[in-house]
Amino acid sequence: MPGDGGVTAASVLLNEYERIKDEQKSRIGFRDNLIYATLASMALVVGAALQGNGNSAMLVLMPPVALLLGWTYVVNDEKISAIGRYVRTDLGPRLAELVEGLDEPFGWETAHRSDRRRLSRKYLQLLIDLLLFCVAPAAALVVYWSVGPVHAPVLIVSLVETAALAVLAFEIVRYADLQKGR
Image (tube, rainbow, N blue to C red):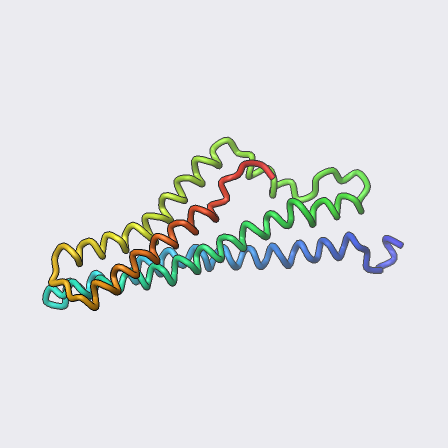
């Protein structure tokens, strides 16, 4: 019976909502800090390459940094989107069934996805993600190949890194969440 201090299904769902939103908030902070960590790591690699008496081979370290941090970014970003999707398509509808007169709980979860500028922001974010995690490390490899000296073992490693960067670019595009609405 509601009001008697007992646990209701609605209160359980609201508690789940609070917990899952806490997880989402923490993942957002972690994901956003990965951008700064990536920039700092890349600056260190470039600095080491410039300090190392023209040792451009140091630039081959940039792709592994970008791959590790970029993949972690993608995984966290996907989980953030999955939490929102779960709230919109599962948790919210279950709560609406339980509470009379409640048409769309957690309306913000859907409303912010219907913003007419959302798609342009998502495409801009996609471009930034690709530039940071794929284009910048690929450019570092091009500089290494151009400036030289290019040694066969390092060249092979750099070619494998190029393929890995292409895979990461594909995954970034695949997980970009460019849909509108629900």
